Length: 487
Image 1: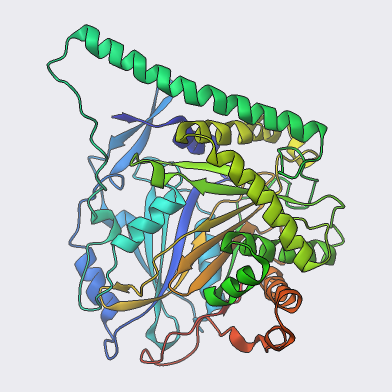
Image 2 (image 1 turned 180 degrees about the vertical axis):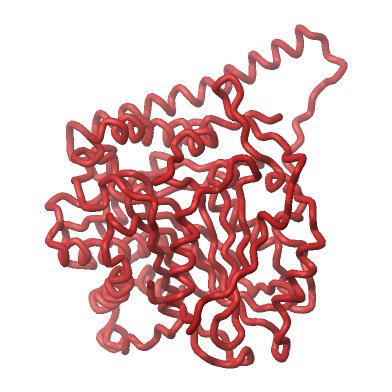
């Protein structure tokens, strides 16, 4: 058995019926031209992979108050792999309604914590996969990489399914097997000292940031500076999912005009959409909303599990001018990035864990409603640039589906694929009514940024650059992306 890290264990401890802790990916595919039985063919091939590689063969067990991973000796592929069809008329509305319902269901802890749903019934013979995994098992970055490894850039190549992919090799640590017990003990103590020298400063930095957030206004967003909003309430177990895809080139043009990164531009787009949503509901606070932005540390280690820190960013929702709002976001994220850049990896992890540590007590006491640590989670997950194929079927669109929690009823995750970014909005159905309107507000947010930052000729281009995500067409029709209306 393998013990879970404190970060991974936290996702199991925090999970309740109204707060499932799994992430997922919704992918939409076009089958090869002329293949009416493509889904049946590749599912038949998938079902031949009856065993799973780690972590897809591991189930959680609780012993003496600690969580461990244990291999499931009775692994059943038929339980995890599910083949379903959309109700007629099989529009994107029905697809996202199905995803909304599936995402609200808990994973069975007596089994490995994942499910793969293959969904037929889209126009033009297209189909989708919805694959969900527990966040204790994997984080968004690792999940996206695993999904990419189960596909190929060659439409003629067939790859093993995601659960049959060999686990990525971890960096080997050289050990002197012939060393004495004293040498091994000294080595362990030395390693513990090195870890402590990074973790303790990270905890201290997180605590200091919290104290500053309670006492003063600073350029860098701090914990507890966030105002109460309709997103910071208790949630139910029901979910609603909405998705939208946008041209990466279009957003890069905005970034170049403002001297901002793509991450800053996506934060500004989300800020504009959230601002309009709150104005519509007459709930816009005077203070700016604060977003928690996960920061991947996978490039700094080969360890598995969740390798994520975070930064807090002001969304500057109190600023009406979209260009000034973007500039404020750039200043906020720049200060946070500079602070993180000076820390080694373990210090970053400790700083991030300390920053979100008050979430637990504030959720239990209910104080998170009046004094939220932050208002919303906005993640940006990088994806493959080249076109991918699933056993010959072209991957058209990628949409991430993340986790709402108590007092964080809305989560926005953005995933890159090719020349597009897919925005996934997931929220509690009761706490965040009319979630689908955020798609319209996202469109409007991009257009107002273009009007403010680009030349009149570029700014006034028609909004028809966004094309329907699913169109009734033959599989031979070139890939089209765009708005994916919510149910």
